[in-house]
Amino acid sequence: MRQDENIEDYLPTSLPFWRPVGLLLDEDEAIDIATNYASTSVQPSPSLTADLKKEFFLISGGHVGLLVSLLGLLNRVPVSIPL
Image 1: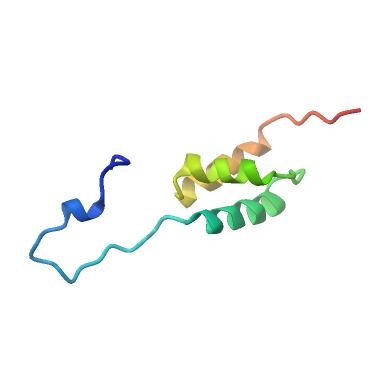
Image 2 (image 1 turned 180 degrees about the vertical axis):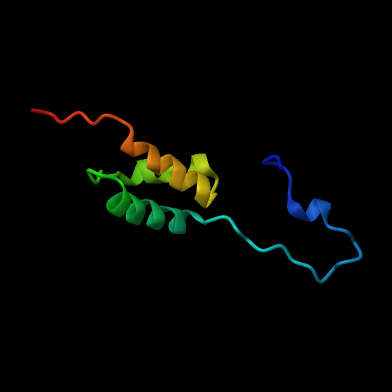
């Protein structure tokens, strides 16, 4: 589905009682998951800035699988430590 589309555009008119279930995370939920996931699953545990967490949310569009996959990539990125 494109960003300018809405699930309601595809609903049959014969099911007016049907409402879609929101399966995407909102920004606060995504930031909470990013914080918890990074602190427990990424080693060494990175210190993610608020801006970076928000960018992860924006990139993933609230899709939890994509968000976790992006955060998982932090394990593969070399970390430089200032001397």
